[in-house]
Length: 207
Picture (cartoon, rainbow, N blue to C red):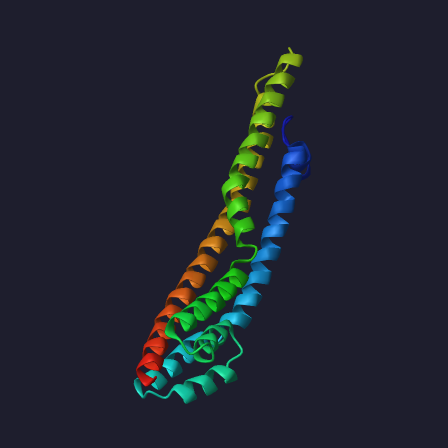
């Protein structure tokens, strides 16, 4: 072991408040991802099968069967389609009722996603801030130790760079999760709008 070898615990301790903040954000990010994953699995499970069944009913002009299919499906998509099927008689009113139902479901799916986006965009800067503080501290230590060699600065900078690495470690999963969930929401909204538009046209023709 050299004179300037530093252990992991010493590096984490040197990170101070910055690493503590990043550790908290990391735990929070994991908790949000896990909670959202379970919620999406419950809300969107079977959506592909529902859409396939609804398309078949639309091709056969089976509006009543489409309604029965929705009532058997517990997910978010069925709530939007039912709002279209059992809403007011006028097309404009049905459109507004359907859009409101879709907005409610999308808002529910988007819950807590802004926090993931914020963490993903700010965590690297928090880590960089910790690195800057660490480098400043390293040079201050060098100035106060006139007989010390460059190893003092090397150790201080290595400790400081841990903050940058920690910031990236927190940000990357947050950004990946945010993009993944956002993509699923957009796909959900697009597919439901297509189905409900078809239903509205069929209902108008039937009327």
